[in-house]
Image (tube, rainbow, N blue to C red):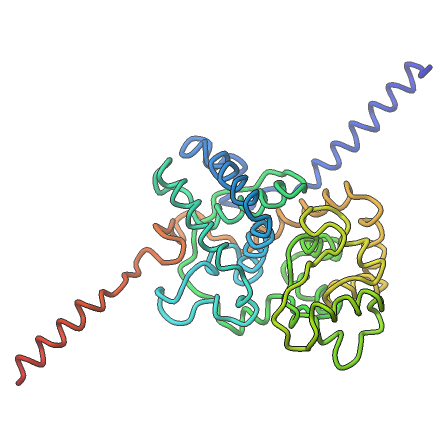
Length: 349
């Protein structure tokens, strides 16, 4: 039988741990808040969640696509949905940069579909940037991951990032841990954040060309031989265009098995496997592999930090009418242009 004193101490310990966990959650940056749309669009999150429940049930792969879209947006010039802009905004878009060529085309369509549903319900008050952040969170939740609140109030940016900026800010699959840590450190993210956010690779697929440098012409010695041989079946050549699951254990479930993969030398990318090889991050990998709740807690912290990088708020930016086009951009009616040119030539001759 537990004494009253023991019960009291247990309650204090539990309460303290809950307080510490809550205290670790990053506060919203200036311009964002936990209840930004409470009055202007109170049904916002339920609209998105309900729609994504169907989308992800129909194609679970879209969860990884939406999560990756948020990453590629935030790491390059901040979470301003600039990655959603297509070439109609003038000049080459971020989507044409090499690291973004494998972003799922359907992900862009899903975000704009969500935008239309939200704007139909609430008016043009919610940014594409906020919709992208919520969709990333829901993609995690709907594949078994942790639920968490998303600070809201972002505006949509009106400028593209250059291709060089994209290359300089995203972590390439062939990057080692030194590069991973240094890239993230410039954004205020530490080693724990880096390892936790890498855990997003617990869902989704990869093209062979992102890792076949570890198979051909020689096998990476840090890769398990059986794992490598199995990969060669799916990726028989260095330039194969096939795809494989990122996590061989539970590819469609957001859990901690990605870290188990790393401990078994079954990480797909160099940037994945080196997290276990490098002594600076090995302990973090091991702790997440052993404790899924710890991984979930740290992942949430990392996502909230990342989701607030260089956000556009207040009177800056805009709320786009369409996510793929700045509000001031107009599509040119080619037929009208041709007709005008013909009339001009007729007048001249």
